[in-house]
Image (cartoon, rainbow, N blue to C red; front, top):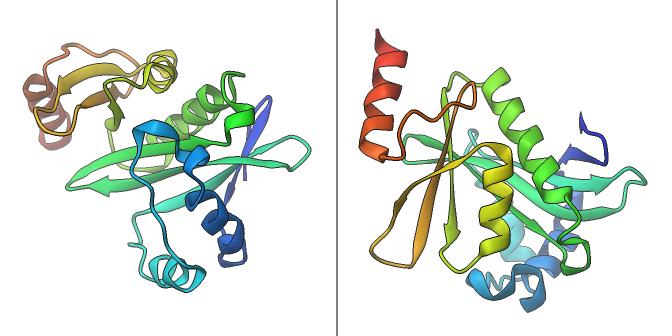
Length: 176
C-alpha cells in the first residue's frame, strides 16, 4: 500500500471486481468526458485476468479505508501512462491530486523511466488542474478525439512542451 497524507493507494484485487464493475457501469462515475465502459461482471473478470503484467490498478482510499476512486499505470505503446477516476462526491477535495502525485513518485522510484504521461479531454479542466499540480505540462493536443497529452519528466523539470523534443531528451537520457 502506498500511504499519503489524506489518501492511500491499495493494489486492486480480484475480489474488488464487483465494486469496480458497479462504478464503471455508472454514467456519473466517469462523467461527461469518458466513454462508458459497460461490461458485465463476467466480462470484467475476463478483462482482469488478461491485464498485461506492466499494468497495475489501485484503489484510492481515504484514511478510513473508504474507496473513493481508482488510479492506474500502464504502457501506452512504449510510454508509461497514468489514468484516474474519483466518485463524484469526492471530486474537488484534493484527493486526486494527492493520489496522482503519489503514483508519479512511485513510478519514478520503482520503474526504469524518466517520463510519465497522461491524457485528458480538452474540456476536462478539473483533470487538467490535477496534472498541473503534480508537475505535468501539456505536450500536444491530438487532432482526433479532443485529447491533450500531458508529460511529467523525472525531477519535475519539463524542458520543452514539445513532445518531439521530450522524446529526444528521453532517448538521450536512456541510451547515452
